[in-house]
Image (tube, rainbow, N blue to C red; front, side, top):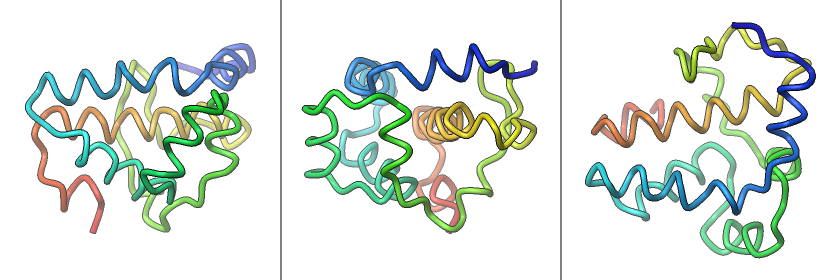
Length: 122
């Protein structure tokens, strides 16, 4: 599927704090921990638990969340299909959408029981 400017804007304007509990519920339902989830977020974005909590309290959008992130140098290694979109084929002009799908891919891998070393592309 192709990403559109409209779709990118919809995702960019969503409040991260409103989606975070769904992510957390998904991984906990599959036997993973909040600490593992936060480790994955910190690896991708550089946000430690305190910074993550302040972003949640601030009710930042996904756009702001990803603009403030310091991406891991290996983030480009996150590949695959999420919700019908192949991450590596999402155009650079839709960066927020691409970053969101990268995060969701890591959450998928965590929920499916993949080893942390593989999730963190070490």
